[in-house]
Length: 361
Image 1 (cartoon, rainbow, N blue to C red):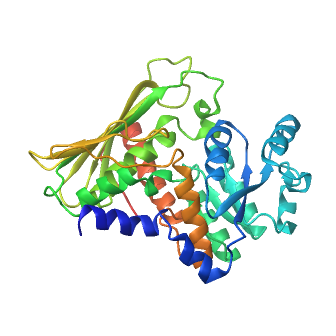
Image 2: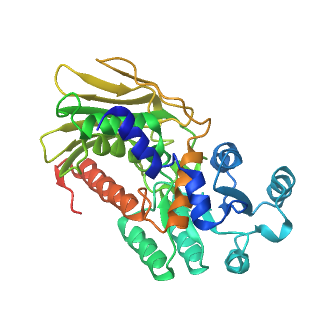
Image 3: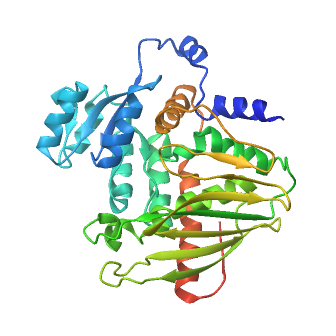
């Protein structure tokens, strides 16, 4: 399969939808699936809500917030009726609202499991922002709740549907330049503010390795097309006044069954954003890679470049709506989210003990 065929095929199953065929199949030309955003922080405000304005299969129909001022502002800006506005006390009443098909959980990590399970019990399909949960046990409970309620579950993995990352995956898994031998996959930025919830271990679960490590893990494992079998890791703290109970920086290495090795850095005090793969003399990379404003690609064979939507989440949410309409499992499934938490738990253990840890799936 060549580059164009792969991207086109991946686009059909991962966000680049053939909308006319879906409309004919379901007779829903005038009906988009309604999404309620739970938590109106910066990600919902500056990424998800704008992305929904360009969606072909979804629309913003509800919000959940504990701040009345935000409720009023969002209601006016996005024409959300008061009956579709909820707070955290009356959230479960969302089950009686036919305007809302999907609940998108955009809360601190410690709240992901609770609101995913409550949304499922309310009969709503769920997108849960990454990382999926604080630990694997919570992931299992979330998957079970959605299965029992017969609703679809996806994790907010926008890059599963982004053309540059799909191309990196094609080049790696199809061995276009040979088998990948080594990968660098790193992400970091400055967030040295103790008031930010991500630096609170109880709310965030462990700092940059939880928040940013997901991207680094996925960049490596999806480019190679394998799951790591063992990890080593090193954790560092330079500013003990800011980073309490969590690592400021985690460097980790993953060993893959086919012989490839990846090396990654996640940090909250320095900027880095790179995915680089090499097969020997040939290489292909994205830099920047993981940020929400767009990737830029290059390789030993030339540029990697695609026209993309202003918001990566548009393709992500449209694909999830298509999963619901066509009753297919999301590529960014709950099981995918749980896989990443299994790897993260192994990395945290390796950093704490200084020993190589095998990953159990």
